[in-house]
Length: 145
Image 1 (cartoon, helix red, strand yellow):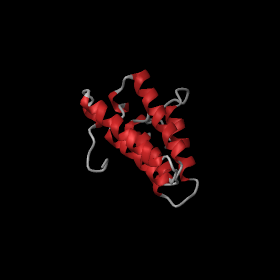
Image 2: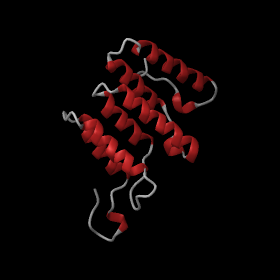
Image 3: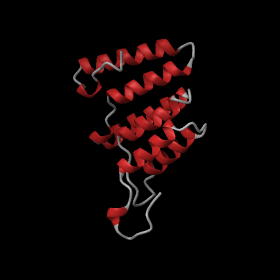
């Protein structure tokens, strides 16, 4: 999605792409997860010029698209990619936060898988340990509990 203009100020920014991903995430379409993922993949692609780059909210919204379709494995992959990109780029815009953990916990709980409660509990303990060790971005909140 882009505007056919030479003016850079008319190109969609990350906020606009996040809104588009949100539309797919909350749609009733069974392809909503794939469509959201395609947008994220394009935003991450370093060879694509003049496209907004994703932030942590972009990843959370794609995780929502997968979680609402009970596709926890895909949500887990998106979270893993967020962690990878944060580690490689060291950008505060990509720092995994409480919202990302909460979304992954939600994905596990919606999955209906027998291991879901244990996976969710493991994520909670991981959050609590990170917070206890100084990572203030992952402080559990009401949604976590």
